[in-house]
Length: 166
Image 1 (cartoon, rainbow, N blue to C red):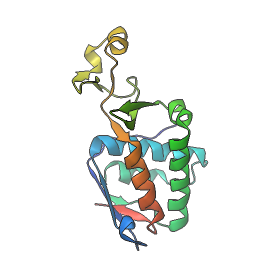
Image 2 (image 1 turned 45 degrees about the vertical axis):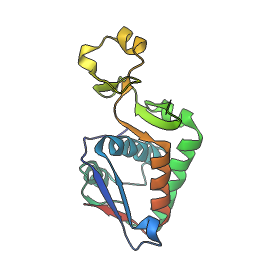
Image 3 (image 1 turned 180 degrees about the horizontal axis):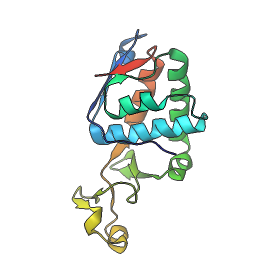
């Protein structure tokens, strides 16, 4: 089961950073929600051994300890990279991939989250949009993260020995 909770903006601090990349990572709340889903998918693909439910809950509220060791950071980085190379992995778990102005983005499908956005950036509530209009207007979830942001997080993971959030 994919674990998701609502979040605030994430300020991620690297533990014993191996360089500048491993010191700090920040992402907005709507992007952090999608990144958390990717982390949950990575955890499922590794048999639920990467991150505990308590750790995931803390990440969901953008506070507390995250991953506490280099090995787990590297395994998570490997899984996230694999998902970026194989979009079908994301699609199997309710994420769509779109190309917004040349930037590949991952979005929750309209079935998962209530705020939808069209190609011009207008927001819609899924409670007020029929499935037919969702398709006609090409609506997708407003929660998204760019492939670039995911790969920046991968670089952060590879450059720290664990992390926490504040």
